[in-house]
Length: 284
Image: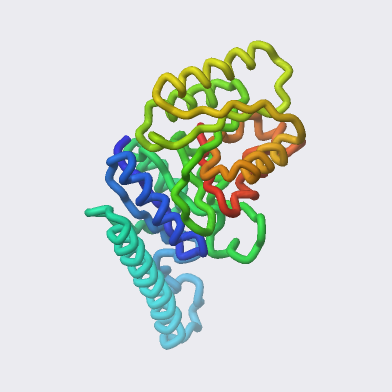
């Protein structure tokens, strides 16, 4: 696991995705790779129309359809290349010396699965180009990526600001316990104040785990603020985040079964929906 990989698609979050990826690349001292995937359903590979035109089809129409299809694909490739050039230039201005650019044709999730063993951190926007005007909508690609990948995923908001504090949404699960260990050992957050926040805790065992988390982080040099709060989970976390001017939220992703999420909703999805100004780091 070596690369910080940033998925770019030309949506409103693309500049922030580039900046957060560059920030992470520098702090982790890891190579930065920009990835643009041409969706095969929107930009299919050239099609042979001869079988669908019929025996009476005109050669001129057949030629025109083929040329239009090829032109559309070529323009999409050129547009993607321009986006990658933009991302590379932005990263260099940020101080990254040699960012890598890759363009693929296929499905985003399938492409990332192929690359997963080389990904240390994945950076992606909350919405794609289709979702730019749909408010709190969570892009379908993002949800598929988060449910499928087993790497840390940083969901970028629409603007970049280097985090001066982080908040770990702690629930005592194995994922958040590993998350505390990851934060403690990673250079990504060194020198940044850490809030550990638990919502609606009435379990002594979890309180002991919360104290363990505080000690683990303190022992590695973090300034730690521990808080136990009450209320509806998403609202309580968002209120604490806003009131304390948190720069990044860290939490486990999709801890319950899909059936339970369908019935009661998912805290993960709700938190992604409210990633307006603050990035969200999701752990699996």
